[in-house]
Amino acid sequence: MTQSDDEIALDVCWLEPPEPMERILDALSTMPPDKRLRVLIHREPIPLYRILGNNGYAYRTQSRDDHLYEILIWQK
Image 1: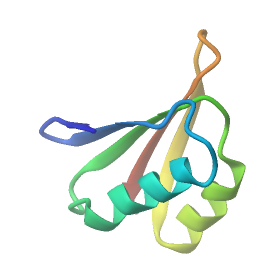
Image 2: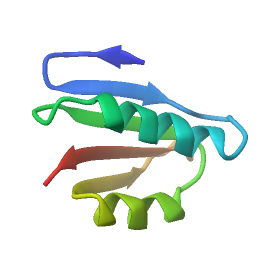
Image 3: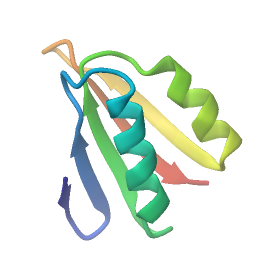
Image 4: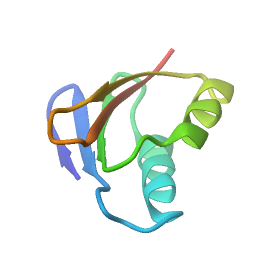
């Protein structure tokens, strides 16, 4: 996990379930409200979206040319 002034980057590519979800939720639980989490993952984490919505987070997902997904998550 790397961090900049306004973002925390988390690469969970190629981890076996449920580890990517666990790492994302762990990062969100300690993330300050003024930061955003940028996640890189090898498949679209559809179940995560409902969890984010139910817990007051917004997100934007982008499919990349290298077939990875980049998800930006922030508190609403």
